[in-house]
Amino acid sequence: MGGLHTVRSVIAKLPLPCLLFWGEESQVYYNDSFSRQVTRFSNKLFNEGALAQTLLADTWPAIAPLIEQVFATDEAIPAVKGMFPFLEEAFDLHDLQPVSDSTGKTCCVLISFVAKEADAVARDKMDVQRRLYDAITASTPDLVYVFDLDYKFVYANRALLEMWGRTWDQSIGQGLLALGYEPWHARMHEREIDEVVATKKPIRGEVSFPHATLGKRIYDYIFAPIFNENGVVELIAGTTRDISDLKHIEEALKQGEEQFRTLSESLEHLVAERTKELQRSNEDLLQFAHVASHDLKEPVRKIRTSANRLMEDETSSLSGRSRVFIRKIDKAADRMFQMIDGVLRYSTMTHLEEDIRKIDLNQVLQQIEYDLEIKIQEREASIRYGGLPAIEGVPVLIHQLFYNLLNNSLKFVKKDVSPQITITAKTMTPDGTPWVSIDVADNGIGFLQDHAERIFNTFTRLNTKDQYEGTGLGLSLCKKIVERHGGTITATAAPGRGAIFNICLPVRQ
Image (cartoon, rainbow, N blue to C red):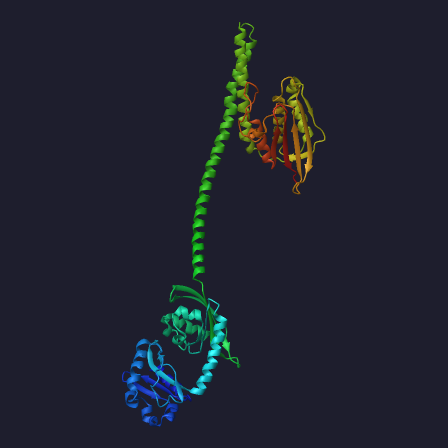
């Protein structure tokens, strides 16, 4: 009954007529303004709680069903003309409004009257204000609304009415419980409204609520105070945004991140395992290369030594045909020895500890000329170079790079033509970074330009072993050395017109 007494105390001093109905026997309370307008209701005894069917005997049959409907539905319903004919000339009736108790249940029904002229002015003012608010909020999907200090809605924009699935008349003046909010939800917002009033500061939150057509949605909301001219909070303005899609995206991203993290961890574990396996394989390969160097070279060396001794043995009576076969054995053993040695150098190159130094290319080429002295003399070759720049690199690898290139130029020569080899260099800065470009050009047999990339592949040969000796490892080793130094190597050639090998190496700052 607390709600009833509160309402009675509020309407008792109102200047406009009001009626309040409650209880199973339909008791009615009317304020002084009502009794002044209708003199037959001036008896104070009745004012304390008379029976409606006694005081309103002539119109009670029309009023009673409407009162019962409000109690049954907890919703306001429009007043019907003719319910109070003795007042309707001077007054307009408001809707029959339910008054809720602390549990949200209707405890009484209020009927109030407004003087026609005053009501028209007030109504016009409210209509103008509502049209202004609607014009401002119509284009936004956000929910916009205003509470009074009794937690009742005094304004709700179109988006909020659509969320509730209610009309303006069904919603304005209603509390949270009457509009479908669960008790915990209503209590939470009422506490927040009290906090805004007490602190005079906005408050923000996040909550789920069922949309009339879209189902359960998630909303982000802000309650902010509205002050009167004295700086006192008189209303609470609210804005609410549907963030359901954003929440779903965040959840999907969170799940995606978790899946990515799991996949990443699996990949890291797999990479670690593969790295260990690769390291073991590399170690096995290196070990095999050493075995090949020591164990395989030895029997090949014995084959060559035995063949040479057999050829030099004066006591043996070898035929010319036998000597040809022995020379073939020696030549094949020599090729095998070179191949084993090439495989060893190729496999161990990446395991050499880097020892970057400044290298004088002129001195490197002088040393290579000394190493290849016999072959140069046999071929009557000419090697021209001079004024080459100093570069930075691993000395043993740079030596091996140019040794292989010059050895190739001495090997792949045209019949009855003396090899002519020229080494030139220049600096360039195509991207602002200094590079050294070195050309090694010869007048040898050359090759088809279509093969310019393939010749750097491991064990690739463009000519038969009977024509030109070699293992097919020399140029692949050159490419590997250049790439180890951060550079590039390319070839330009034509059959019978020689070849040019270009090496570009970055200049270390």
